[in-house]
Length: 362
Figure: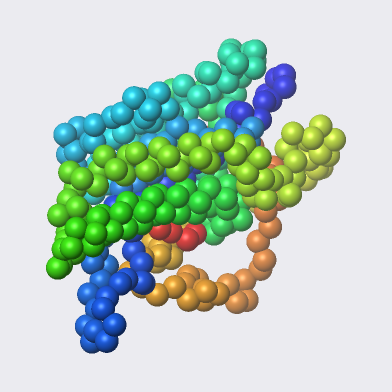
């Protein structure tokens, strides 16, 4: 990569599920009531938000995925949302998939990259590094082949089971974003209840206000407000990048870059031996990827279940296995990811596989 690499061209994003009706373990009822009904506790309606940021402290425009088969499932866009350049799309089950991923690249990442190249007076052919996790669609042959139409984008994959440490969206961004939406939902619903109490209603009516036609425009507005509040806190976003990446190695420090390059040169033979193996070894690696995907789905958090802090939900058993290092992740030549397309195992997960984003832990 020639010239100076700008921090704004190091990008990470992640998909996360947003409940249309926020869950709570608390409610109001008359004293002495023997039966307390929880409205919306079984409501599992969601949308998917794709939250992205750059190492320069920018929060990229959101992609929001609604459930539906046509654009008629989208809420009406407001002027503020249009100005923020949000991308609103849909899928049959609101999950991110191959189509929505390609849309995210074309509608969010490419315009942002071009804007930053112009803003910082960078060479027109400047590269952008896109850091993403090992979800089956991300690493599929279809997606990696498709993204070659944008040679300026270099994909760097976070090792399996490391996103809670190495992915800034998981480390810093998703939780406050979702909390901001939940807080606004609670304020809105509390206002409805208060109005009915002041009007002397004998029974509080909640369900009519939870229709999709009511919630979708509100969800769009709340998403914008929560996103905009985070966007104004650049130091907060950059601290997330520091915690997830720079504490391991500051990739923008010239001395550390030189030291890392020397280490790669000195260990070139060992790295080549590590990544080059027999067909059986390559098949074993494919099986490990598939096992990681399966475990990722098992690790997804069911919002309807009680959370036990400190309890490991993964079914993987690492006892007796050699410890894994993160060094290969930092030294991995991105070209190595693209060079093995033709040798991809036939067991590669189909690109049509969708990602459930109710909430996840990798």
